[in-house]
Image 1 (cartoon, rainbow, N blue to C red):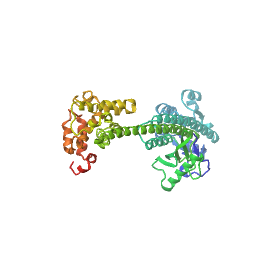
Image 2 (image 1 turned 120 degrees about the vertical axis):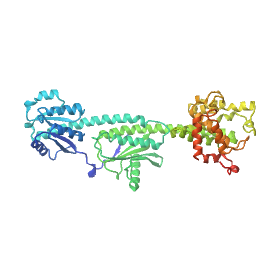
Image 3 (image 1 turned 90 degrees about the vertical axis):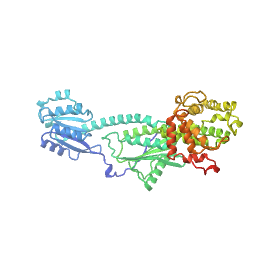
Image 4 (image 1 turned 45 degrees about the vertical axis):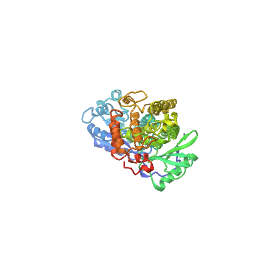
Length: 514
Protein backbone atom coordinates (compact mmCIF):
# COMPACT_ATOMS: atom_id res chain seq x y z
CA UNK A 1 0.00 0.00 0.00
CA UNK A 2 1.40 3.37 -1.00
CA UNK A 3 0.61 6.67 0.63
CA UNK A 4 -0.31 9.29 -1.95
CA UNK A 5 1.01 12.68 -0.98
CA UNK A 6 1.71 15.98 -2.65
CA UNK A 7 5.15 16.57 -4.10
CA UNK A 8 4.37 20.20 -4.93
CA UNK A 9 6.38 22.95 -3.29
CA UNK A 10 3.96 25.44 -1.82
CA UNK A 11 4.38 28.16 0.75
CA UNK A 12 3.17 26.94 4.10
CA UNK A 13 0.72 29.09 5.99
CA UNK A 14 2.04 30.63 9.18
CA UNK A 15 -0.13 28.28 11.25
CA UNK A 16 1.76 25.27 9.82
CA UNK A 17 5.19 26.24 11.17
CA UNK A 18 6.84 23.62 13.34
CA UNK A 19 7.09 24.28 17.04
CA UNK A 20 10.45 25.63 18.19
CA UNK A 21 12.92 23.52 20.12
CA UNK A 22 13.01 24.42 23.80
CA UNK A 23 16.35 25.06 25.52
CA UNK A 24 16.47 25.56 29.30
CA UNK A 25 19.40 27.62 30.60
CA UNK A 26 19.90 27.12 34.36
CA UNK A 27 22.49 29.50 35.82
CA UNK A 28 22.50 31.88 38.78
CA UNK A 29 24.53 34.47 36.82
CA UNK A 30 22.22 36.71 34.73
CA UNK A 31 25.14 37.71 32.49
CA UNK A 32 25.78 34.08 31.56
CA UNK A 33 22.13 33.59 30.66
CA UNK A 34 22.11 36.79 28.61
CA UNK A 35 25.32 35.85 26.79
CA UNK A 36 23.91 32.41 26.02
CA UNK A 37 20.79 33.97 24.53
CA UNK A 38 22.91 36.40 22.49
CA UNK A 39 25.23 33.70 21.13
CA UNK A 40 22.29 31.54 20.05
CA UNK A 41 20.35 34.34 18.37
CA UNK A 42 18.96 33.17 15.03
CA UNK A 43 19.71 29.53 15.85
CA UNK A 44 17.78 26.97 13.78
CA UNK A 45 17.96 23.21 13.47
CA UNK A 46 15.88 20.96 11.19
CA UNK A 47 13.73 23.93 10.11
CA UNK A 48 12.81 24.68 13.69
CA UNK A 49 13.80 27.75 15.66
CA UNK A 50 14.99 27.83 19.26
CA UNK A 51 12.99 29.01 22.25
CA UNK A 52 15.23 29.79 25.24
CA UNK A 53 13.84 29.44 28.77
CA UNK A 54 15.79 30.76 31.76
CA UNK A 55 16.06 29.75 35.42
CA UNK A 56 18.29 31.38 38.03
CA UNK A 57 18.29 28.43 40.41
CA UNK A 58 17.52 24.72 40.64
CA UNK A 59 14.22 25.59 42.32
CA UNK A 60 13.20 27.85 39.43
CA UNK A 61 14.32 25.16 37.00
CA UNK A 62 11.98 22.60 38.63
CA UNK A 63 9.06 24.98 38.18
CA UNK A 64 10.04 25.53 34.55
CA UNK A 65 10.27 21.79 33.94
CA UNK A 66 6.78 21.33 35.37
CA UNK A 67 5.42 24.04 33.08
CA UNK A 68 7.25 22.92 29.92
CA UNK A 69 7.24 19.15 29.52
CA UNK A 70 8.74 19.27 26.03
CA UNK A 71 12.13 20.82 26.83
CA UNK A 72 14.74 19.25 24.57
CA UNK A 73 18.04 20.42 26.06
CA UNK A 74 19.10 21.85 29.42
CA UNK A 75 22.36 23.74 30.06
CA UNK A 76 22.84 23.41 33.83
CA UNK A 77 25.37 25.18 36.06
CA UNK A 78 26.70 23.13 38.98
CA UNK A 79 27.17 25.71 41.73
CA UNK A 80 24.06 27.77 42.42
CA UNK A 81 22.06 27.83 45.71
CA UNK A 82 24.42 25.16 46.93
CA UNK A 83 27.72 23.76 45.70
CA UNK A 84 25.95 20.77 44.11
CA UNK A 85 22.55 22.29 43.22
CA UNK A 86 23.06 21.53 39.53
CA UNK A 87 23.96 17.91 40.16
CA UNK A 88 20.95 17.51 42.45
CA UNK A 89 18.83 18.94 39.66
CA UNK A 90 20.18 16.29 37.28
CA UNK A 91 19.15 13.59 39.75
CA UNK A 92 15.71 15.20 40.07
CA UNK A 93 15.22 15.20 36.30
CA UNK A 94 16.33 11.62 35.78
CA UNK A 95 15.08 9.94 38.97
CA UNK A 96 12.11 11.95 40.23
CA UNK A 97 10.69 13.06 36.89
CA UNK A 98 11.79 9.92 35.07
CA UNK A 99 12.75 12.11 32.12
CA UNK A 100 15.36 10.16 30.16
CA UNK A 101 14.77 12.02 26.91
CA UNK A 102 15.96 15.49 27.93
CA UNK A 103 19.59 16.08 26.89
CA UNK A 104 21.61 17.53 29.78
CA UNK A 105 24.79 19.53 29.38
CA UNK A 106 26.63 20.45 32.60
CA UNK A 107 28.34 23.87 32.49
CA UNK A 108 30.61 24.98 35.28
CA UNK A 109 32.92 27.85 35.98
CA UNK A 110 34.45 25.99 38.91
CA UNK A 111 35.66 22.62 37.59
CA UNK A 112 37.27 21.84 40.92
CA UNK A 113 33.88 21.73 42.64
CA UNK A 114 32.64 19.03 40.22
CA UNK A 115 35.50 17.24 38.41
CA UNK A 116 34.54 16.23 34.87
CA UNK A 117 35.38 12.54 35.17
CA UNK A 118 33.53 12.15 38.47
CA UNK A 119 30.41 13.91 37.14
CA UNK A 120 30.36 11.90 33.90
CA UNK A 121 30.81 8.61 35.81
CA UNK A 122 28.18 9.29 38.49
CA UNK A 123 25.49 11.39 36.81
CA UNK A 124 23.35 10.69 33.75
CA UNK A 125 24.46 13.64 31.65
CA UNK A 126 25.23 13.98 27.95
CA UNK A 127 28.07 16.50 27.99
CA UNK A 128 30.32 18.44 30.35
CA UNK A 129 31.68 21.88 29.51
CA UNK A 130 33.88 24.41 31.28
CA UNK A 131 32.26 27.80 30.78
CA UNK A 132 35.56 29.10 29.45
CA UNK A 133 35.25 26.63 26.56
CA UNK A 134 31.85 27.82 25.43
CA UNK A 135 32.66 30.37 22.78
CA UNK A 136 29.82 31.25 20.44
CA UNK A 137 30.91 28.54 17.97
CA UNK A 138 31.42 25.86 20.61
CA UNK A 139 28.06 26.71 22.17
CA UNK A 140 26.39 26.39 18.76
CA UNK A 141 28.03 23.01 18.19
CA UNK A 142 27.11 21.76 21.67
CA UNK A 143 23.45 22.77 21.40
CA UNK A 144 23.10 21.46 17.87
CA UNK A 145 24.59 18.07 18.81
CA UNK A 146 22.30 17.84 21.84
CA UNK A 147 19.22 18.73 19.77
CA UNK A 148 20.15 16.14 17.13
CA UNK A 149 20.46 13.49 19.83
CA UNK A 150 17.11 14.55 21.31
CA UNK A 151 15.43 14.46 17.89
CA UNK A 152 16.77 11.01 17.10
CA UNK A 153 15.72 9.65 20.48
CA UNK A 154 12.27 11.21 20.08
CA UNK A 155 11.95 9.64 16.64
CA UNK A 156 12.73 6.22 18.08
CA UNK A 157 10.38 6.81 21.00
CA UNK A 158 7.55 8.13 18.83
CA UNK A 159 7.93 5.14 16.53
CA UNK A 160 7.72 2.92 19.59
CA UNK A 161 4.63 4.77 20.79
CA UNK A 162 3.19 4.68 17.30
CA UNK A 163 3.68 0.94 16.92
CA UNK A 164 2.29 0.44 20.40
CA UNK A 165 -0.68 2.57 19.39
CA UNK A 166 -1.20 0.47 16.28
CA UNK A 167 -1.04 -2.73 18.33
CA UNK A 168 -3.47 -1.26 20.87
CA UNK A 169 -5.76 -0.15 18.06
CA UNK A 170 -5.76 -3.56 16.36
CA UNK A 171 -8.34 -5.24 18.64
CA UNK A 172 -10.73 -2.31 18.14
CA UNK A 173 -10.14 -2.12 14.39
CA UNK A 174 -10.59 -5.88 14.00
CA UNK A 175 -13.55 -6.07 16.39
CA UNK A 176 -16.27 -7.79 14.38
CA UNK A 177 -19.78 -7.40 15.65
CA UNK A 178 -23.11 -6.07 14.47
CA UNK A 179 -21.73 -2.53 14.28
CA UNK A 180 -22.21 -0.58 11.07
CA UNK A 181 -19.55 0.43 8.58
CA UNK A 182 -20.03 4.01 9.79
CA UNK A 183 -19.08 2.98 13.33
CA UNK A 184 -16.10 1.04 12.00
CA UNK A 185 -14.77 4.02 10.07
CA UNK A 186 -15.37 6.45 12.91
CA UNK A 187 -13.14 4.18 14.96
CA UNK A 188 -10.52 4.14 12.19
CA UNK A 189 -10.47 7.95 12.00
CA UNK A 190 -10.13 8.17 15.77
CA UNK A 191 -7.13 5.83 15.66
CA UNK A 192 -5.46 7.76 12.81
CA UNK A 193 -5.84 11.11 14.54
CA UNK A 194 -4.73 9.57 17.83
CA UNK A 195 -1.59 8.26 16.13
CA UNK A 196 -0.81 11.82 15.01
CA UNK A 197 -1.17 13.12 18.58
CA UNK A 198 0.93 10.62 20.48
CA UNK A 199 1.93 13.09 23.19
CA UNK A 200 2.63 16.75 23.93
CA UNK A 201 5.85 16.76 21.93
CA UNK A 202 4.23 15.63 18.71
CA UNK A 203 4.70 18.47 16.29
CA UNK A 204 1.27 18.38 14.67
CA UNK A 205 -0.83 21.04 16.31
CA UNK A 206 -4.07 20.06 14.59
CA UNK A 207 -5.20 17.56 11.99
CA UNK A 208 -8.35 17.20 9.92
CA UNK A 209 -9.41 14.03 8.19
CA UNK A 210 -12.12 11.89 6.72
CA UNK A 211 -12.64 8.26 5.78
CA UNK A 212 -14.72 7.23 2.76
CA UNK A 213 -15.70 4.04 0.97
CA UNK A 214 -15.78 3.44 -2.77
CA UNK A 215 -18.39 1.05 -4.13
CA UNK A 216 -18.47 1.20 -7.90
CA UNK A 217 -19.37 4.77 -8.77
CA UNK A 218 -20.60 5.57 -5.28
CA UNK A 219 -18.27 7.38 -2.87
CA UNK A 220 -19.65 7.58 0.66
CA UNK A 221 -17.97 9.59 3.42
CA UNK A 222 -18.29 7.35 6.46
CA UNK A 223 -16.58 9.57 9.05
CA UNK A 224 -14.92 12.98 9.28
CA UNK A 225 -13.38 15.21 11.93
CA UNK A 226 -15.54 17.91 13.47
CA UNK A 227 -13.50 20.73 11.94
CA UNK A 228 -13.34 19.27 8.44
CA UNK A 229 -14.26 21.72 5.64
CA UNK A 230 -17.88 21.71 4.44
CA UNK A 231 -19.78 22.84 1.37
CA UNK A 232 -18.03 23.17 -1.98
CA UNK A 233 -14.57 22.63 -0.48
CA UNK A 234 -15.72 19.34 1.05
CA UNK A 235 -17.06 18.12 -2.29
CA UNK A 236 -13.84 19.17 -4.02
CA UNK A 237 -11.68 17.27 -1.50
CA UNK A 238 -13.83 14.17 -1.86
CA UNK A 239 -13.52 14.32 -5.67
CA UNK A 240 -9.76 14.88 -5.59
CA UNK A 241 -9.21 12.05 -3.09
CA UNK A 242 -11.21 9.66 -5.24
CA UNK A 243 -9.17 10.68 -8.28
CA UNK A 244 -5.97 10.15 -6.28
CA UNK A 245 -6.94 6.63 -5.25
CA UNK A 246 -8.03 5.62 -8.74
CA UNK A 247 -5.10 7.25 -10.57
CA UNK A 248 -2.34 6.76 -7.95
CA UNK A 249 -1.19 10.40 -7.91
CA UNK A 250 -2.36 13.39 -5.93
CA UNK A 251 -3.94 16.00 -8.20
CA UNK A 252 -3.52 19.77 -7.65
CA UNK A 253 -5.98 21.36 -5.29
CA UNK A 254 -5.18 19.72 -1.96
CA UNK A 255 -3.07 21.19 0.84
CA UNK A 256 0.68 20.74 0.38
CA UNK A 257 1.00 18.41 3.40
CA UNK A 258 -2.13 16.41 2.62
CA UNK A 259 -1.98 12.63 2.36
CA UNK A 260 -4.35 10.05 0.94
CA UNK A 261 -4.06 6.52 2.31
CA UNK A 262 -5.84 4.10 -0.04
CA UNK A 263 -7.82 1.22 1.43
CA UNK A 264 -7.59 -1.75 -0.93
CA UNK A 265 -8.86 -5.28 -0.88
CA UNK A 266 -8.14 -7.99 -3.42
CA UNK A 267 -6.42 -5.45 -5.64
CA UNK A 268 -9.36 -3.05 -5.89
CA UNK A 269 -9.96 0.25 -4.13
CA UNK A 270 -12.43 0.01 -1.23
CA UNK A 271 -11.98 3.55 0.06
CA UNK A 272 -9.46 5.96 1.48
CA UNK A 273 -8.30 7.83 4.56
CA UNK A 274 -7.56 11.51 3.92
CA UNK A 275 -5.57 13.52 6.45
CA UNK A 276 -4.72 17.19 6.30
CA UNK A 277 -2.16 18.08 9.01
CA UNK A 278 -1.18 21.66 9.70
CA UNK A 279 2.51 20.71 9.64
CA UNK A 280 4.66 18.50 7.48
CA UNK A 281 4.91 14.93 8.69
CA UNK A 282 8.14 12.94 8.79
CA UNK A 283 8.82 9.79 6.80
CA UNK A 284 8.50 7.87 10.07
CA UNK A 285 5.06 9.37 10.68
CA UNK A 286 3.94 8.44 7.20
CA UNK A 287 5.33 4.93 7.61
CA UNK A 288 3.29 4.39 10.76
CA UNK A 289 0.17 5.67 9.04
CA UNK A 290 0.83 3.32 6.15
CA UNK A 291 0.96 0.37 8.55
CA UNK A 292 -2.28 1.49 10.16
CA UNK A 293 -3.95 1.96 6.75
CA UNK A 294 -2.93 -1.57 5.78
CA UNK A 295 -4.48 -2.89 8.98
CA UNK A 296 -7.65 -0.94 8.27
CA UNK A 297 -7.84 -2.34 4.74
CA UNK A 298 -7.58 -5.91 6.01
CA UNK A 299 -10.07 -5.26 8.79
CA UNK A 300 -12.52 -3.62 6.39
CA UNK A 301 -12.37 -6.59 4.05
CA UNK A 302 -12.94 -8.97 6.98
CA UNK A 303 -15.80 -6.83 8.25
CA UNK A 304 -17.47 -6.77 4.85
CA UNK A 305 -17.14 -10.53 4.53
CA UNK A 306 -18.60 -10.89 8.01
CA UNK A 307 -21.46 -8.56 7.16
CA UNK A 308 -22.17 -10.55 3.98
CA UNK A 309 -22.29 -13.75 6.02
CA UNK A 310 -24.50 -12.04 8.59
CA UNK A 311 -26.81 -10.72 5.85
CA UNK A 312 -27.07 -14.23 4.42
CA UNK A 313 -27.90 -15.55 7.87
CA UNK A 314 -30.57 -12.89 8.37
CA UNK A 315 -32.02 -13.68 4.96
CA UNK A 316 -32.15 -17.36 5.88
CA UNK A 317 -33.96 -16.47 9.12
CA UNK A 318 -36.47 -14.38 7.20
CA UNK A 319 -37.06 -17.12 4.65
CA UNK A 320 -37.62 -19.77 7.33
CA UNK A 321 -39.92 -17.42 9.22
CA UNK A 322 -41.86 -16.73 6.02
CA UNK A 323 -42.19 -20.46 5.34
CA UNK A 324 -43.57 -20.98 8.84
CA UNK A 325 -45.95 -18.05 8.44
CA UNK A 326 -47.07 -19.28 5.02
CA UNK A 327 -47.79 -22.68 6.53
CA UNK A 328 -49.87 -21.16 9.34
CA UNK A 329 -51.67 -18.34 7.57
CA UNK A 330 -53.99 -17.85 10.51
CA UNK A 331 -51.21 -16.12 12.48
CA UNK A 332 -50.86 -13.27 9.96
CA UNK A 333 -47.91 -10.98 10.86
CA UNK A 334 -47.51 -12.68 14.24
CA UNK A 335 -43.83 -13.44 13.60
CA UNK A 336 -42.91 -9.83 12.78
CA UNK A 337 -44.77 -8.58 15.86
CA UNK A 338 -42.96 -11.07 18.11
CA UNK A 339 -39.69 -9.70 16.75
CA UNK A 340 -40.71 -6.13 17.65
CA UNK A 341 -42.12 -7.04 21.06
CA UNK A 342 -38.96 -9.01 21.91
CA UNK A 343 -36.60 -6.16 21.03
CA UNK A 344 -38.66 -3.65 23.03
CA UNK A 345 -38.92 -5.80 26.14
CA UNK A 346 -35.22 -6.73 25.99
CA UNK A 347 -34.28 -3.05 25.80
CA UNK A 348 -36.65 -2.26 28.67
CA UNK A 349 -34.81 -4.87 30.73
CA UNK A 350 -31.47 -3.21 30.03
CA UNK A 351 -30.21 -5.31 27.14
CA UNK A 352 -28.01 -3.38 24.68
CA UNK A 353 -29.76 -2.30 21.49
CA UNK A 354 -27.59 -4.36 19.14
CA UNK A 355 -28.06 -7.48 21.28
CA UNK A 356 -31.81 -6.83 21.47
CA UNK A 357 -31.91 -6.77 17.66
CA UNK A 358 -30.19 -10.16 17.55
CA UNK A 359 -32.73 -11.50 20.02
CA UNK A 360 -35.60 -10.12 17.97
CA UNK A 361 -34.29 -11.85 14.88
CA UNK A 362 -33.94 -15.17 16.74
CA UNK A 363 -37.51 -14.87 18.10
CA UNK A 364 -38.89 -14.91 14.55
CA UNK A 365 -38.21 -18.64 14.37
CA UNK A 366 -39.93 -19.59 17.61
CA UNK A 367 -42.74 -21.39 15.74
CA UNK A 368 -40.76 -22.68 12.75
CA UNK A 369 -41.60 -26.22 13.90
CA UNK A 370 -45.22 -25.70 12.85
CA UNK A 371 -44.00 -26.59 9.36
CA UNK A 372 -44.32 -30.20 10.49
CA UNK A 373 -47.83 -29.89 11.95
CA UNK A 374 -50.79 -30.98 9.77
CA UNK A 375 -52.90 -28.16 8.31
CA UNK A 376 -56.13 -29.48 9.81
CA UNK A 377 -54.71 -29.06 13.30
CA UNK A 378 -53.29 -25.57 12.66
CA UNK A 379 -56.58 -24.39 11.17
CA UNK A 380 -58.98 -26.23 13.49
CA UNK A 381 -61.81 -23.81 14.49
CA UNK A 382 -61.87 -24.96 18.10
CA UNK A 383 -59.74 -26.13 21.02
CA UNK A 384 -57.32 -28.98 20.42
CA UNK A 385 -57.91 -32.13 22.41
CA UNK A 386 -56.01 -35.30 23.30
CA UNK A 387 -53.77 -36.52 20.53
CA UNK A 388 -54.28 -33.26 18.59
CA UNK A 389 -52.78 -31.27 21.44
CA UNK A 390 -49.91 -33.72 21.77
CA UNK A 391 -49.22 -33.41 18.06
CA UNK A 392 -49.29 -29.60 18.22
CA UNK A 393 -46.84 -29.63 21.14
CA UNK A 394 -44.38 -31.50 18.95
CA UNK A 395 -43.69 -28.25 17.06
CA UNK A 396 -41.04 -27.39 19.68
CA UNK A 397 -39.09 -30.59 18.96
CA UNK A 398 -39.53 -30.16 15.22
CA UNK A 399 -38.32 -26.57 15.35
CA UNK A 400 -35.23 -27.47 17.37
CA UNK A 401 -34.52 -30.34 14.96
CA UNK A 402 -34.73 -28.05 11.91
CA UNK A 403 -32.41 -25.45 13.43
CA UNK A 404 -29.82 -27.83 14.87
CA UNK A 405 -27.60 -27.95 11.77
CA UNK A 406 -25.92 -24.54 12.02
CA UNK A 407 -24.43 -22.72 15.01
CA UNK A 408 -25.77 -19.44 13.60
CA UNK A 409 -29.23 -20.71 14.49
CA UNK A 410 -28.33 -21.93 17.97
CA UNK A 411 -30.04 -19.01 19.73
CA UNK A 412 -33.19 -19.45 17.62
CA UNK A 413 -33.08 -23.23 18.23
CA UNK A 414 -33.16 -22.72 22.02
CA UNK A 415 -36.11 -20.34 21.71
CA UNK A 416 -38.01 -22.69 19.39
CA UNK A 417 -37.48 -25.56 21.80
CA UNK A 418 -38.17 -23.88 25.16
CA UNK A 419 -40.60 -20.98 24.69
CA UNK A 420 -43.51 -23.06 26.04
CA UNK A 421 -41.76 -23.89 29.32
CA UNK A 422 -43.40 -22.23 32.35
CA UNK A 423 -42.07 -20.43 35.40
CA UNK A 424 -43.59 -23.10 37.69
CA UNK A 425 -42.12 -26.00 35.68
CA UNK A 426 -45.40 -27.34 34.27
CA UNK A 427 -44.80 -26.42 30.64
CA UNK A 428 -43.43 -28.47 27.75
CA UNK A 429 -41.44 -30.16 26.24
CA UNK A 430 -39.21 -30.76 29.30
CA UNK A 431 -41.46 -29.58 32.13
CA UNK A 432 -38.67 -27.61 33.83
CA UNK A 433 -38.89 -24.12 35.40
CA UNK A 434 -38.34 -21.50 32.73
CA UNK A 435 -35.85 -19.77 35.06
CA UNK A 436 -33.42 -22.45 33.89
CA UNK A 437 -33.63 -21.14 30.35
CA UNK A 438 -32.44 -17.92 28.76
CA UNK A 439 -33.99 -14.50 29.33
CA UNK A 440 -34.74 -14.37 25.61
CA UNK A 441 -36.81 -17.54 25.90
CA UNK A 442 -38.75 -16.10 28.84
CA UNK A 443 -39.44 -12.89 26.92
CA UNK A 444 -40.76 -14.80 23.92
CA UNK A 445 -43.01 -16.84 26.24
CA UNK A 446 -44.76 -13.64 27.38
CA UNK A 447 -45.03 -11.79 24.07
CA UNK A 448 -46.09 -14.91 22.17
CA UNK A 449 -49.07 -15.48 24.48
CA UNK A 450 -50.04 -11.80 24.53
CA UNK A 451 -50.01 -11.54 20.73
CA UNK A 452 -52.05 -14.72 20.44
CA UNK A 453 -54.65 -13.29 22.84
CA UNK A 454 -55.08 -9.95 21.00
CA UNK A 455 -55.19 -11.66 17.58
CA UNK A 456 -58.09 -13.47 15.93
CA UNK A 457 -57.49 -17.19 15.54
CA UNK A 458 -59.67 -19.93 13.99
CA UNK A 459 -60.72 -21.02 17.47
CA UNK A 460 -61.23 -17.57 19.09
CA UNK A 461 -61.95 -13.91 18.58
CA UNK A 462 -59.38 -11.23 19.40
CA UNK A 463 -59.35 -10.17 23.02
CA UNK A 464 -59.30 -6.52 24.10
CA UNK A 465 -55.75 -5.53 24.93
CA UNK A 466 -56.60 -4.62 28.53
CA UNK A 467 -58.04 -8.07 29.16
CA UNK A 468 -54.97 -9.66 27.58
CA UNK A 469 -52.50 -7.65 29.68
CA UNK A 470 -54.46 -8.52 32.83
CA UNK A 471 -54.19 -12.20 31.93
CA UNK A 472 -50.45 -11.86 31.40
CA UNK A 473 -50.04 -10.11 34.77
CA UNK A 474 -52.12 -12.80 36.46
CA UNK A 475 -49.70 -15.40 35.09
CA UNK A 476 -46.63 -13.77 36.62
CA UNK A 477 -44.67 -16.17 38.86
CA UNK A 478 -46.72 -19.15 37.66
CA UNK A 479 -46.59 -19.18 33.86
CA UNK A 480 -44.25 -16.24 33.24
CA UNK A 481 -41.08 -14.62 34.58
CA UNK A 482 -42.32 -11.80 36.87
CA UNK A 483 -39.57 -9.40 35.74
CA UNK A 484 -40.47 -9.87 32.09
CA UNK A 485 -44.14 -9.34 32.86
CA UNK A 486 -43.39 -6.09 34.70
CA UNK A 487 -41.29 -4.78 31.81
CA UNK A 488 -43.93 -5.73 29.24
CA UNK A 489 -46.75 -4.21 31.28
CA UNK A 490 -44.75 -0.99 31.73
CA UNK A 491 -44.35 -0.68 27.96
CA UNK A 492 -48.05 -1.32 27.49
CA UNK A 493 -49.18 1.27 30.04
CA UNK A 494 -46.87 3.90 28.54
CA UNK A 495 -48.67 3.37 25.24
CA UNK A 496 -45.54 2.18 23.47
CA UNK A 497 -47.20 -1.04 22.26
CA UNK A 498 -50.37 0.53 20.84
CA UNK A 499 -49.31 0.57 17.19
CA UNK A 500 -48.09 -3.01 17.31
CA UNK A 501 -51.32 -4.17 18.92
CA UNK A 502 -53.37 -2.40 16.25
CA UNK A 503 -51.48 -4.30 13.57
CA UNK A 504 -52.72 -7.56 15.14
CA UNK A 505 -56.35 -6.54 14.71
CA UNK A 506 -58.10 -7.46 11.47
CA UNK A 507 -59.53 -4.54 9.43
CA UNK A 508 -63.14 -5.08 10.53
CA UNK A 509 -62.07 -5.18 14.19
CA UNK A 510 -59.89 -2.05 14.32
CA UNK A 511 -62.66 0.10 15.71
CA UNK A 512 -62.58 -1.93 18.92
CA UNK A 513 -60.95 -0.12 21.84
CA UNK A 514 -57.56 -1.25 23.06
